[in-house]
Length: 318
Image (cartoon, rainbow, N blue to C red; front, side, top):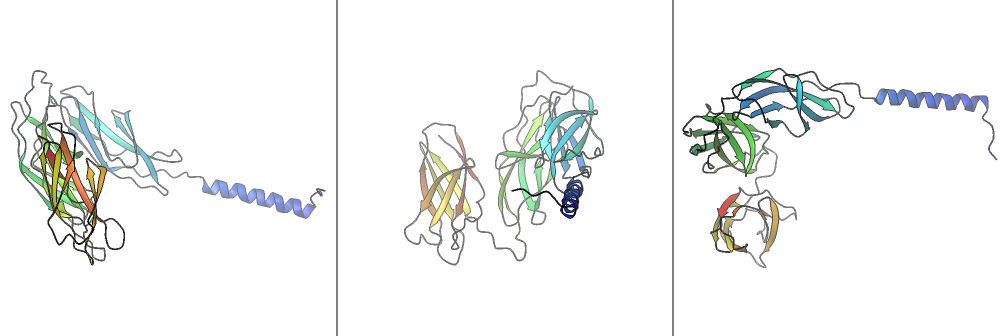
């Protein structure tokens, strides 16, 4: 049978409820993120501008960003995205952008500093792509950044932007007057491959530059790089022949994973020690000419974990 609350018990219950309310109020997030910094805007063509920024800070976590043009929101983006292309712009016009951060409670940061980019005049009849950039070279700038430099491309009108790609994904854009770019957010002791494309005002893009590989330096106290090295791939009709050198480990590596275009393709297992390398493997692919494959490998280490991915190697089927 339920007994009525005594005065003491009732007071204790009211105190507990009040405490819960106070705790809930204290837990409510009312702090807005800081304003994003380092905002840049680069006109990539007559109708597009590439906007980038550095991450904002929050007492809990930033959950997203909003990009504004002339005070009107044009993009909503998740927290992990720190750049975007704003398209459909008027040619030959200055465009001003700001960025705001938001958190899970809906708190919004102040506007970032405003930046302006002027789109070039339209050139509707221009169908000639720029030549590809040449002599691409990349140097590490610490364990988490790199500097790229190249010889400029040529165009029948003018180059308006250079797009930097890492393993086929665009990660940065700089103005057409630049021949250098700095990329950040890399991982220590990791293999990367970069290419650069030139673009003009009519959105014509050049062919990729030659790829420039980079392995970022290790950080003292962390494990050494474990990526396979010297990866090359040769395409024939219906097959890709891959050659590489396994990483040096305490015991011989007998197992590798092979990925094509960022997706797992197969596991390669040797029953015995394959030696220090190089080693070769042939993978069957559809006999369709002109298909581009980007291939990476990683080795199974003696502790049973998978090592770092190799620098991507590419080939086009014949």
